Amino acid sequence: MKIAFFDSGLGGLSVLHLALERLKNEEFLYYADKDNVPYGLKSREEILNFTTKSVEFLIKQGAKAVVIACNTATSVAINELRAKFNIPIIGMEPAVKKAIDLQQEIPDENDLRVLLIATPVTAVGKKLKDLIGRVDTNHLVDVLPLPKLVEFAEKEEFASSDVLEYLNSELLKFNLTNYSSIVLGCTHFNYFKDTLRRILPSNIKILDGNEGTVNKLISELEGLNLIENNKQSVEFFYSSKQVSSGSEITKLKRYLKRLDEMIDIA
Image (cartoon, rainbow, N blue to C red; front, side, top):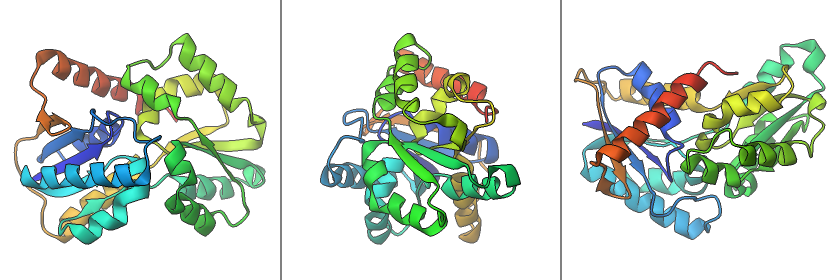
């Protein structure tokens, strides 16, 4: 039985990357819906349909649990997926609570704000609004949609002049001296940690929800006695087609290598 990770594209590799470090004796599946990426500008009905079919496919491939390693798909489909499928379905949650908790630990930052960046669908979704409403009692969280970052990530364009121009133009809409942290509300955004670090003031923390997701995955597996002791492996799929070409495997390895470089940037 295998642990599956699903994303619209290659952003979810950032969650798989952490799981590979934490679960050394598991077999993994990774599914990128490359035929339909990006999800951030799709309708809710389309996203729910794409995600449901993808999870059905992964279960047929032997998935014992599925991580929806996509904030947009989680926002739209997580409740329906959990109702439909009788295996653990783990979703993504932006690290808004973590950002606010960290801020409260530092007296000088109590009045500072938190900036959450996400796709347009996540930014306006009920799930995010409910999360912010639950944890942001002082109304300190601002939300900024950054749809082009997903497109840049899918093109392996992480620090080009176009990326820098885009991030600068969007982030400079805010007075960043008033912020304590930036929360990455899309798994694709993890590839840009070094670029964001160049732009942001040094006091601003960069936070993501990957650790919380992997912790939840491990807890669910342990609770159901589903931890295994196999030789670690990963099978990759692009929209139900197994990735077998050498050039694509090499590309995926480049993405994982970049994540090695991003992991300690905060």
